[in-house]
Amino acid sequence: GTGVLFFLLSFVVPNLTRIFIEMKQVLPLPTSLLIWFSGLIQAYWWAMLLVIVATILGIKEFIKRPRGRYIWDTLKLRLPIIGQVNRKIALSRFGRTLASLLESGVPLITSLQIVRNIVNNVLIGDIIDEAMEDIQAGKSLNLALSRSAWFPPVFRQMVSVGEQSGDLEKMLYKVADAYEREVETRIAGMTALIEPIMILVMAVVVGFIVISILLPIFEMNQMVQ
Image (tube, rainbow, N blue to C red; front, side, top):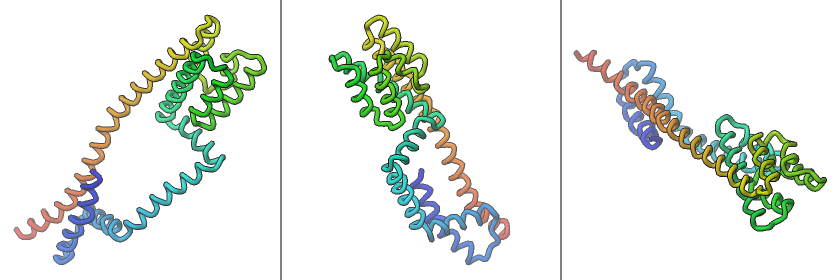
């Protein structure tokens, strides 16, 4: 779709523009806007590309800094819709990795340290650090996780049941499976919604271009008649 738009704006529209200019025809507003935008792309495409590249590089450099990384990781968890998906992915990864490590006989504190690195999120890492401090002070995993609102009540309840029953690994696997299913359902729904929206937007844009091109042609035919 993007390639078609680029072709229309870079080649088709400029050629038609020359014809309209030679005929000294008064152009409709949509056509004038289209010609202006096409000329803008032709004249400053390199500047637009430069801005895009500079923005990407700037974001990458910003994320490398501690403060920037913290803001970026926080945004990933708090953005509408996408933030919820990222959060559930992190919760699933936390639960499954911790369950696997505990099942292999790795001590809880060591397991949490490993999970902290695997989750790869500064905000979540700080929460896990606080939880490890509470566990070392004698608190249970459930109470340690309750210190932060990032872990949902359902997650903490499953951990509590696992600790009381002596089958923490099984409960962690279950909660990880539940969040994975939620993520799959949410992504499938988002994909099903995004595709028709993209098609509709592309159809509107292409339709505007086609109408803008045809309007002066129709007017020329009327003048000839």
